[in-house]
Amino acid sequence: MFRRGSEDREIEILLVHPGGPFFTNKDAGSWTMPKGEAAPGEDLLARARIEFEEEIGIAPDAAAHWIAVGSVKQKGGKTVHAWAFEGDLPKDFQLRSNLFRLEWPPLSGRITMFPEVDRAAFFPIEEALDKINPAQRSLVARLLAIVTTANPAA
Image (cartoon, rainbow, N blue to C red; front, side, top):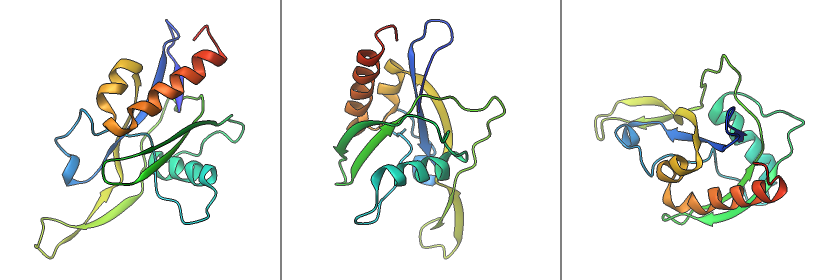
């Protein structure tokens, strides 16, 4: 999701911060676009819509125009296929992410539930490029190129 800032109309990108103990004290380079894994043969855009809702807690606007941004391969080998749409979070937005189970602390035998995402925020492009996983930086650049080409006033 992206929006245009209220005063200068600068593009801002919605990023999410992974939940769980491994990312608690990590910031720069840890945020991502909302994402998830698709089953073999699954429609990737349909999966993107589902993942957005699961990670953010709100359904994207059914009338939203989704823009194919492209794909990147992350350091761990996972391929991220990205789409974006213009929109904003509701004024009363409260993050409601799916939960995952993890034995924590390791080897403790205790299973703890953690949110997949613990924060979501819009960032201006320069800050988004600092915050986002380095493998996804090119997606931000591609989105910006698409949006500014389609609407030069952005």
